[in-house]
Length: 303
Image (cartoon, rainbow, N blue to C red; front, side, top):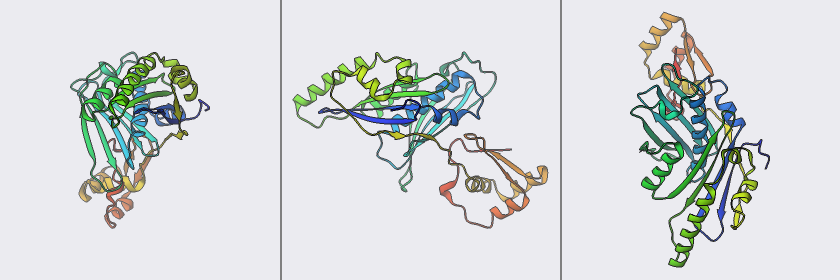
């Protein structure tokens, strides 16, 4: 695999209940954030969250989106990443006051909440879980959540250098085999976990998946599956923004038009600008709202 490519690749340890995946985000990371100027610590945190979103999405059997979101009453107000079933990823951050480049994510959080949202596109109800901010890094927080909420042993390694992001996930699925196999899985899980914990940021970011697996687990029998491509993808559209504006109400929009002459909306994720004049806003109330294209968390800001 060319490390310059943006990919997620699944693998399994043969004859065990242990699976994993590795993701590399290069162009995806660049395109998601190149229009957003932010301090280095927040940029790196978003990179790790982007990698984590892809790793977790790869474990789900769902057609929809996974949203990872941190809210805080400190300098950091919002960190949000969305990854869909096709590994289309977008991300953004909001903060207030002066944030230094040398400040890490956890120095900026006060009374924070970490939320995981599963938003299926098949008509099923969305699920949201609140994740305790237990641990001193994003990997530890997600590992604790997977163990306590999903009862699945999970180990996650994440890295971001400000230019690219990468991650590796290992999971031990619930045992359904006989006791001998269960004991073998526990032994293998403990062994591969110790070995995986030796991975460096440089290896995670710059080694191709097959090379990294060979270096770490050369004594194990691993089956590596075909790679899936990741990409930057923003779901904003003029239709979705129009639906959002209609929710403000006809009178409120008329007041904005009277004051400013037009309504300007910028997408927080991709910085695309949408302009609506008097004729545009009048037409908004002549058609039915399509709820499927109303923006979700991180919705565009109205100016």
